Length: 283
Image (cartoon, rainbow, N blue to C red; front, top):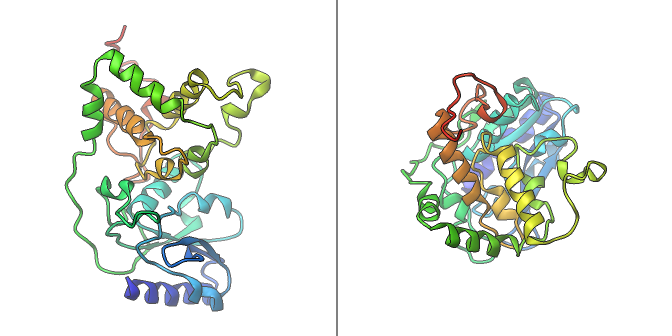
């Protein structure tokens, strides 16, 4: 990874010096060796602070929305980050010409606490960026995975077991909304949970209201989820949020052949599109 880091610093400085971009979004070192934090570099001389190592756990795609309007921004993207960029373009949140994508192949990131590979990386089938303007480093081999393995175990439970499972999950939820804040496809300017005047969602933290928030969010992002796993990584209560997301993804693929979101910028949105030929077996 040191070669990638060196090249990244060089290219970031060149892009900023030439005026091709006004900012480079990547990662910089944290306080400890096993920490990094998102970096927003605007001066060529500061490019030396960029890092790329096995602890670059934060996805970068959503940060590009924060910087919109400044000018063209360079964004470091791996497989998960690039899928987020594609989906935001599909959702009209971002224009392709607003970003210069520095592609970086990824062999998986490590958990800062345990030193083991992150769950979201173990479940990732796209280790190489799916879109980029330039690629740093050699492409890596991508694993063949059954990303619905946990979903199939959930589906094998009977109704009582599933109810008990989800009760145990949502009684731990503290409604901090970290999942919403890091999600690259949670891009509403005003979230339904903040619409107190409309009474969509109460502020009590109990199982019923926590379920309402969780399931509503899953329906909102289900056909757009790029499976980056940031929601689950950021959750302070270690809730299995990707299990719900992937259950929705699996069902949508079965019903509408929705496929995997973010592989290109021409994605579909079956939950937000009416079609007279939609499957109606539930009626």
